Image 1 (cartoon, rainbow, N blue to C red):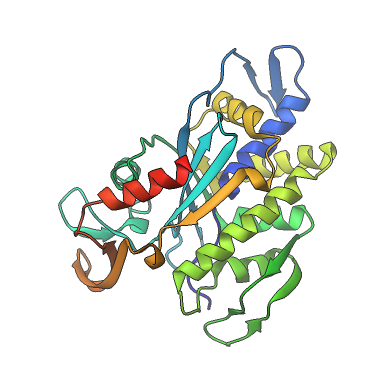
Image 2 (tube, one colour; image 1 turned 135 degrees about the vertical axis):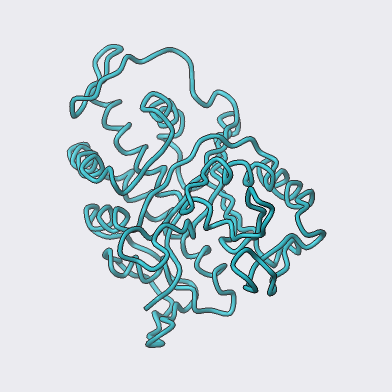
Length: 304
């Protein structure tokens, strides 16, 4: 079985899709859908730069189903009209509340969301209070609903068990093939190869959803509401509405992706003593739990 996980900005896409529906079917200052209603207020949720934590987990039925193997900082800059996606490796080691080293992808599953937000803030130097979590089950439902996603595969993608290889080329992916691409990490770069595939897939899905006719967007919104047990967020409806109103016209050129990986020279991998015993993990290259260089790298990315 292919190990690992799948995706990244899709959590935001979910919010943006049903907010797009509300925007197009609102009258005056009132919005209503599926029995939910609210009054639109003046002002903007992101009239200043803001960062939202995007978490992807496999979900029920998968090994490690609650581990957030996809961790992405989505930084929105309305002045520049840019979205910056910074992928954080799931094997990065951080301290838990008792002072033990643990993998950062385990904190959400251990019901430690506040600690996860605190550690991500320490690592990035960005204040992060808001998050979106989505599981693989809903991702697959969305892919099938939109009729599949067209993607150019640049590097061979190999199944770790059967060694089946998806060769470079153009593909139209249904949900099963999307899962294959989004979860596969059998490559020299390991998990970092999967992260690269995830970001490529995000842009393709973004384009597909933006091209849907209004009727299909309504039906997609209904699909999302019917699957509330497969996603969660601490953003309220009005916040998501305002977010969508600012970025609904963005194209892929407005989205920049970056991966915190070994090529940056900021990380080192190895076997370390953690709360679970000796296991593989990743630490900052300059000092065990100091993030000055990582913060500077992120700052340069979002200010470029």
